[in-house]
Length: 468
Ligand code: 4AD
Ligand code: MG
Image 1 (cartoon, rainbow, N blue to C red):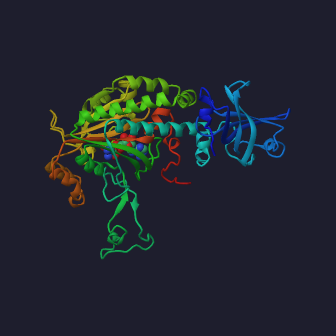
Image 2: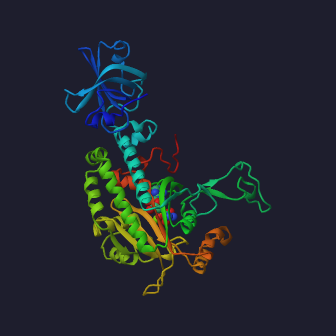
Image 3: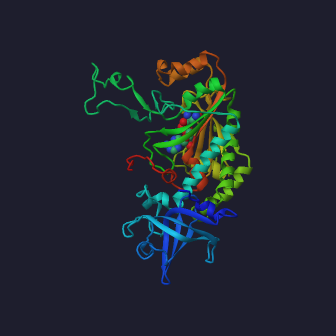
């Protein structure tokens, strides 16, 4: 079908005089004078196109006069300046074909306000609503801007495996991948399940991060990025955690922590600017309906410098804040969301990059710093915090010294033989390198102002929830 997207029908300065459009009925009004006014949405933009169907059309009495919300139709006709209020262009139909009816009584997405909680129970139909259409288009624009940023800077897009034998973050939040019969798995002499008989002849999991494999590519190809789904069996029922989320992870050879932070800042600004430039209609919708600060916040961030502080400085600020923290803060503890939000929302009022965390709370691969004046051991880590979300990016310079890496692996009880290939990068032509990971959904949440991460991915995966 040679159809015109409604976006083009509405915005082209000179739309084709005659056009075919197709979509789903949002509302329909059958007037007594023998006309029907059908508002049609096809997902190409937030706005709907009004289709005017004349009672003289051959299928009017039988089909058009009974059209209801949710039905799918194809309409052909002339695009003309509209006499009605609220739209510049309408389609005067010479033909309206009804492809699929929707039963008016049972169709869940009625033209009225639905709560986001209700719409989560209708995940298969919620893309037809304004909010979820706008989220899908902004998410798409964010992804396009991500690729654009790295492609323009000469990064190679690489694909790291989804099934892996390693636990990159060392947090043990892994989903096991197995083809063994879980009701009667083979067992070894000690009674433990014998994964040597499993599909891959070893224990395998869904990846929590593509970083380790990305490092191997960066240490050959220079600058690379991987962008794919990652999985964490983390029992966190919060508005910012998913069990399946998408992460973009650049990895740069010949790069230190400062270069990593510079790239992260330029990257976020590029993405925010692209969304402001390219999603004006959807962003106005989020600003009007979801969070009336998103437009100002994004424009401000795209033009201002991020704050940079060390973890130790941040802890001092938090200790002096005179607040009753739910999780009292002192050196050595990990920052909680309440602390992150305080720093970025109240102390600095802008995105904040925190660097040089205690080694004891960070994974094995982060580069160990010289001990500080008090003899405390930190690593060259960085987290980028933004208002309302807290951590949006986590990254670090990587440990490129073999002896230090091996000592860290031993400290964290990792089996050296499982990571031999990773250590090999340090045996053969090691180089300083660094990278970071941006959680795609946290980014879309931040940009749109959507309060719950379950509403920025079509099918959220969270503890006890994988319907659809
Ligand atoms: O800080 P994280 O755990 O870092 C890594 O995985 C590194 N290997 C990345 C790298 O250096 N290549 O995760 C990175 C980001 C977080 O800042 C957050 O935005 C997002 O991934 N993230 C989650 N998003 C949604 N749900 C979860 N459960 C998430 N866990 C992390
Ligand atoms: Mg992190």
